[in-house]
Length: 228
Image 1 (cartoon, rainbow, N blue to C red):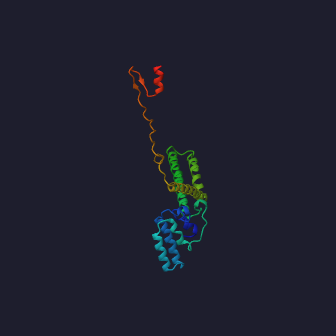
Image 2 (cartoon, one colour; image 1 turned 135 degrees about the horizontal axis):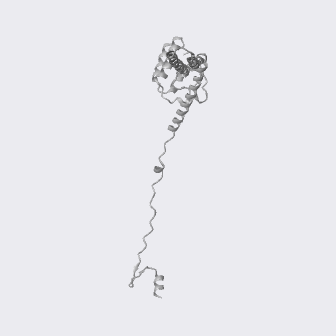
Image 3 (cartoon, rainbow, N blue to C red; image 1 turned 60 degrees about the horizontal axis):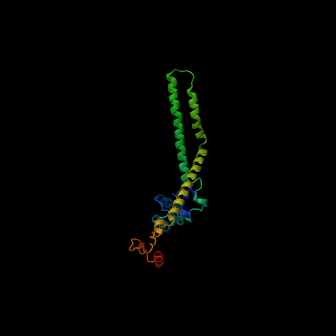
């Protein structure tokens, strides 16, 4: 570990960020702490008892938030950027950026070699003449030459792309964590009481037929009108 940025950049997630403190620590995260403790013990900054105690605490750590206190007096503080995104130049990001550059350079080399070889073979097969494969060699060779000249610039561009990718992943994780922390309510169907049947009107007395076959009710005024 050559710098504080390299130390914090080696974790799966920056353990200093409060949103990451509740995440489970991986074996790789614990190995980062073990390596810092071993270097501090070798430099004489920790005695044997302190080294053993902190090593045991590191092995027992379950979340990322338990790890920074073990390094507080061993690693110089580095400001955490807004949003918890790690700064460029971290060891992990640079390693990934260099690996991406080497992969692209290898692809560019094969993209130069394969078509150039095929074109030269065709040119030889049809007899020497105007060396037209030179156009193919020049066109594909420019890409390889550009990658060799712009090596550091390409690596820095790869680092910036990786930073943007990490920032997006971090934002998605925070959003997923917030959605999981929201209390789950009961469904609307469960919250609302079941519909009660409407009150049924009271049964009305049925009209009774009179002697003449007509239905009559019990109202006296109606009977009076009928008699008249």
